Image (cartoon, rainbow, N blue to C red; front, side, top):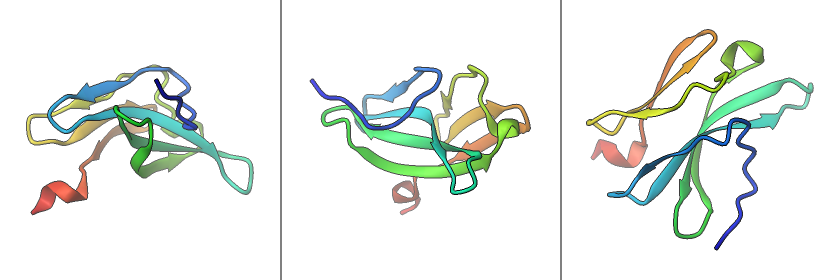
Length: 94
């Protein structure tokens, strides 16, 4: 068992068993107090955050419960109030 220090407001994860990562919308406060939103990959064995990409700051980038989706090419797609976000793991670029 493990616990993660990541703040996952919606508690929704998408798991990719081939690469052993769970993907989630995470949130961290900025120095100004605004919410910064991230797409974060968490190792399913250890709970350690493997990478995190900031997708926006403020309420327009909140997911509002929208689930993340994994595309066949490895892209991670998510809906925010401002629109769609696409993230791809750099290690997949060869």
